[in-house]
Image 1 (cartoon, rainbow, N blue to C red):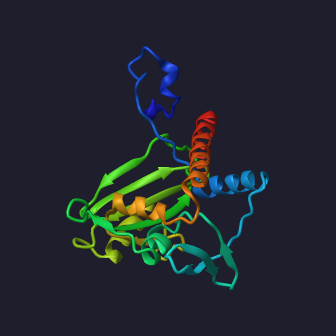
Image 2 (cartoon, one colour):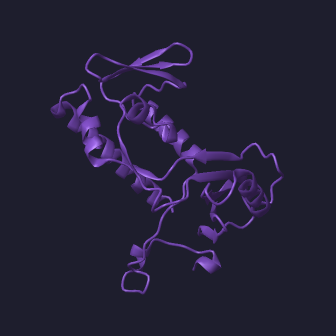
Image 3 (cartoon, rainbow, N blue to C red):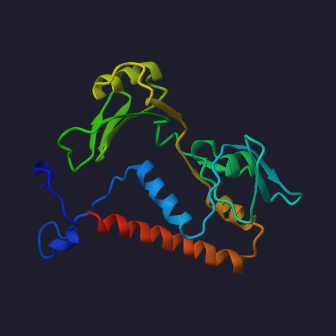
Length: 228
């Protein structure tokens, strides 16, 4: 089906060779974020946009508030760290430990670039092995995301960027080119529990919020599946 540009959920083809097949959805992150933002604001959620400049903790070590670059302060009882590789709350502020996996996963750099969507979009992700890692291409409806995952021990960023540019057929200096640096690691399980326990809210008040968060994620998945 992929070669012919076709797709449908495998559960709709029970008692066939593809009935138990697995699949994944690639969603435009910006469009999804805009949709969720509007969806949440209509239901009373207050959105504050800004760059976190400082994380302030109280005497017990609990996260008390965030100070933004323009001086505004955001106070709360429950904080979720969504700062990506920077890990401003969970790592730089709370000092949560990580297990280093670089011995097993040597790739520690990622270069990404976005290009225009082709006239005919393929219903699959393409991965190509390279000398220092691999390149990937994810087709979306309005653009195509491409990247090069590689190990800094076997290649330099400049060379990998040139490979990605040639592969993506975009001019050197494209502004959408981004470089991400982070050693492969996973958060220590014990530290995860300790970080959650450092929330100021009692567990009996925190648990309903976590349940609602999980339900919201599940509704998002159902919504994505419904628009296929």
